[in-house]
Image (cartoon, rainbow, N blue to C red; front, side, top):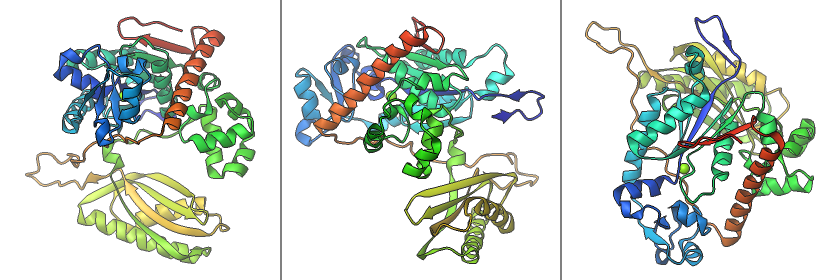
Length: 435
Ligand SMILES: [Mg+2]
């Protein structure tokens, strides 16, 4: 929940759009060489160079070729597969154009990978009665296509997790051999209902290991997971259990993290022996707050968010963060905020292996001089967008990937049968339709 500053009304739910370009590298290659259109091809290194598929065209997907598959296997599945070498610098440049276009809708953008981003359009929708998450998503899809010639799929929901899963479901429901250009909208309040028939592996953080542990308990769908007692999940899976239970019920409170906010300064201490005394922890925290403040001052930065991180003796992590009323570079302010967080997180029983204090939400210190024409400018960053992980999968893993995809398609069909038109809306850019 967020409230609009200065406005009387309170926003009762957020509106998050997840944007994912369809077969991004392939789409860029098709722009360079239009003769590739409609053909089965894969971008990546050749099989003899032990290459993997970085991206594959939709006609190639029809033969069973998938991203992250070994190129040799892809060529066995699809003997006429054309292999196009990757050109990362070009993809990064096109990606930057896409992100700029998306930022023209809202600066509240979190780039997830080279071809994926979340947009928080809550305020945009709240301030313009004519706009909805759906209408904005369609507008984004139209402009990305018309201005950059790229097709994308979108998910709209009240939080990041459900929006991303919505995109996946939208894509999975289109099996035409062309770019899906899907749009899937999950109405607020119906998140749990939307997730219920999907396999647990559709949730963030549920990998094959956890999936099989849940299966041992008889939990295969998100709906079954949502009904399992949270306390029992916490007992079995530690702190992750609480997240699992919330996510299964469609609850995800994570905010959009913009590039500027994701920049952080931190200081950490790993203790030689696990620490159980408050004085010892607090002493470390004071030193860390001072070191963070010193670095802020040296870089002429101020921060609005203070965060602490604890690593417990079982190697699991906990973090807590708080937003300050105004930005600071002062050690006592950071120390006070971090101490308050520590008292909430550490109740005096568990041994601590590592403690860290960090700050984010950075901005340059205002220079209120006569000759400073731009006192509010942001720090600029020149970081490259993260490149997608390409993992060489075994054939067994590819099989698992394919089964998961199949289950997702089945789940979408099930949703369709069970809820009719108003839980999920799927649509293509030109030919929007509702389930
Ligand atoms: Mg993509």
